[in-house]
Structures are given as C-alpha cells and as structure tokens.
Image (tube, rainbow, N blue to C red; front, side):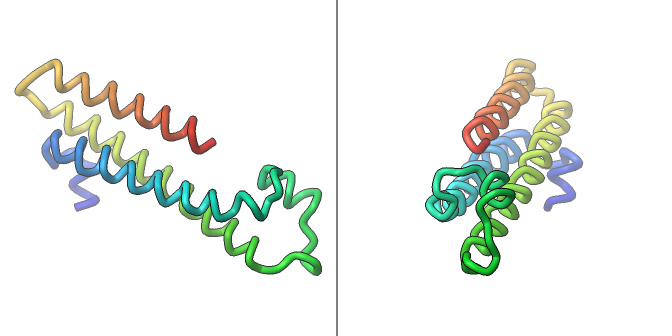
Length: 122
C-alpha cells in the first residue's frame, strides 16, 4: 500500500483524507505525546542546549535519553511520512480528472497542512 501511495495509484480522496488528514493527525498526536513527556525533563531548555551544556551522564538517568530518542525517532518518522503523503497527494491529484478545482485544492491544502504541522512542532 505504501508503494501505491508513493506512486499516486490510490484515489485522490483516499490519499488526501485517509493518509493526509487522518494519518497526519495521528502522527502529529504521537510526536506531541513524546514531546510532552520529554519537555519537563529538559527544564525549559532546547534539546541541543540541554545536551551540550547541562547533560551529565553520571548524574542524569537514562530516562531522559530514552525520552529524547523516542521524540526524535517519532519526529523523523513523521517527517518522512508527511513527505510521502505530499508526494502521494501530488501524484494522485495529477491523475484526477473529475474536477480541476479539487485537483489543485488538494495540493494547496496538503502543503498548507504540512506548513502548520511543522510550525507547531518546531
């Protein structure tokens, strides 16, 4: 199914709603959960600042490392997924011949949602 998504072989409605909207919301929710687990452990610092200036492996436990790995892994997987969905929606909309409006509306909305997701996460 992933190969069909990338190739744009699925219908525009299925690609947009199932993978773009529902899959995007689920991925966003997972990233946010891991971010909320990690945030109190960072004491208000960014991940980069915390690990370059305040992290001490002898003093800090392994729970913050696990939380950081889970957050960064979920963020990386989500970013790859979003890229795949954009590619799938773009290709699927190129094959959509029922309405020119929906063809370009799907492209615009999916790009806008990517912008919103990335702005909120970063």
